[in-house]
Image (cartoon, rainbow, N blue to C red; front, side, top):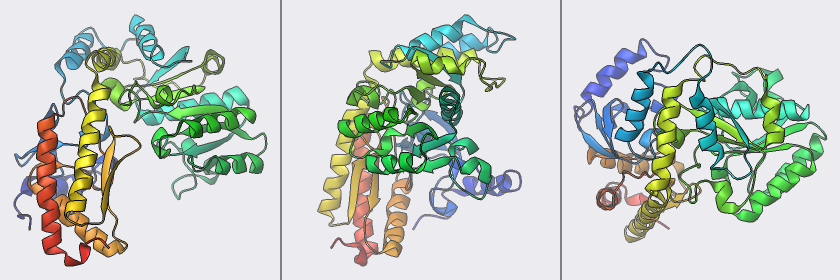
Length: 413
């Protein structure tokens, strides 16, 4: 079992934070397992490694939920952002770097002619839907995936007013017939169809083309939310991989390699509807993050970051599936939807057994300094190495052996 003292400093900080922060943590920082059995507070990161406040160094497969495609603290990116900060990164009006940044992003998405800049992926998705509503004069949005936490993107929930939740309907991207049914239920009402590409499994060219054609046939705007997939999917995005051109694209995460920046890019006809649109925020014009993003984009292409992440993801997925077979455990590793975003889950039909097995497996991984999220997809980066993957697989091999020893009922059927 995990030593109760291994994460002592993390547990102390959690108690302090719970008195100050609702829940004690931000949403992406929720405990991986029981706080006594997993690290919770981290001190620093470099490359593909992080150090917790208790002094343990980990190979990190989560990479802060995706922003660090080049790895933590990439010197060239941070130097560009720091240099821009020294000139005052936020000024009273506009800055030439705003146009330079949009040019750099637009150039990487076929069909895109204009763009607008934001700070987070949630903001970008909310803005894209507002643009689509203005472009069409309609209000309803059909969504598949998670386009952020803004009320205008979310379906019914206790925290979302009914008047905002009602115009958001959901469909299954892998089954375009479910979208057709929504158009039938809401004739001439749907402004936008927003799809997170990671929800289309497998990544099938025809499915994306059918969704786009169906959207346009009903006069709606087709939005691809590539917050997770852009720049880490060879040859640069899912839309380029499958050969589909959306009306609007949302990007963030890998765009800034840790610097908070996002964008919506799209066709001129739709993007021009964003002129004078109410969506101002004091920090949208921050040029430090844009300077970091421009350098990030250059490095991603120059160093083949997406191709590297794809190859290592394939290695990890293949290796973990082989280990599961070797140990006769009901489990599967796969890409969500592609190898640069891998995940691993146990598939025992008994949910209680699954939970116990997962706790043992992931707890062992943390004890041996491999950081993998048990509930959220992972992210490969340029900073990960083949030696890292070898080490991860060795730890997972031992973790599965431990599962077999401690949970005889976990064996595959």
